[in-house]
Image 1: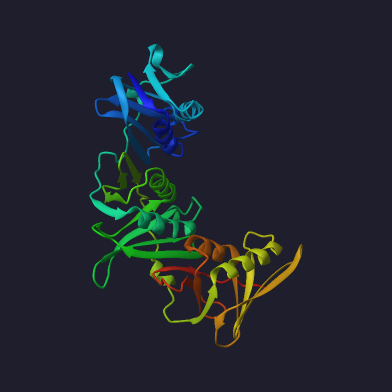
Image 2: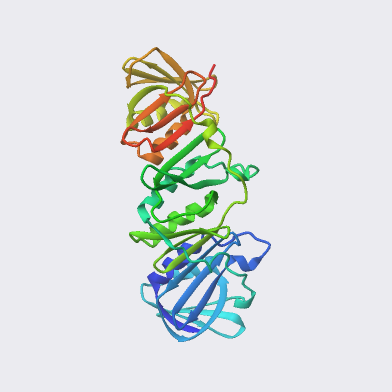
Length: 372
């Protein structure tokens, strides 16, 4: 194998696989990148057996062949090279020679035959979706995914196709048991039966792919236990979580609550300041609603107390509710805190529904806290 390649193109492909390759694994080969040179060009692939990514990189191929080398080592070497053409040459003893100008590095590799298959890479996604839309719906739900690995059916975002008034829609839902995020957007020509659970790590990789390989549209497909996304020059396949997502409809409020409308940026800054006085992870904040005013307060016996008042569009009886401040901040940050938000309240112990004033199809449900 021998080829010449642009340094920036090679760096981009190697950067994209860094979070997929396994750093600590009982299979050392999973720390490697599979490098294959053929008439079509250079292909760089990596997998952790749950996620696989394959990137095509334009290159001048002098001699076809393939090998695998440690992905992090190769990336670290290449990114420090000067901006010039890089030559990759496979020598004896499975050593990959990396030459750029007067720089020459030889990395010990392993035979390509030892590399496992790339799960899901044989599938071809047929549906198209605006890249910005896919990135948006992931970003506006992923913050609610549970990080508790024992609750594997909450470790991802639930994708489902729902019937709309005029056309089918794609709905994403995530929950960690204390809060829920949901967004509904046009499905375009994407279609699949039932619902599927996409793991958090895979969703982060989709957003990374969209960022690294920008294009107006991205191909998406769900089949054979995988979700596959493809942009020009790169394909990402993600094994779905084999579990049943809980019935999220049970926690949706059955009736309309009392509404309060507030400036998202003002609410975020007040919550950040008030929660500084709370030491535990729960970050409990008390929200007192009265005509035109929202008073936010917190207290901890170790540090002290804090309170702040902001203007709110609220007309109704005085109402006090306790919420985890971090949960509300996560929502405001993910959705865009510069907007005005509606807080729909269902009493002191009922769930709070939060959504942008301009878009109720993007919402969050937060369970209240009992505060002393």
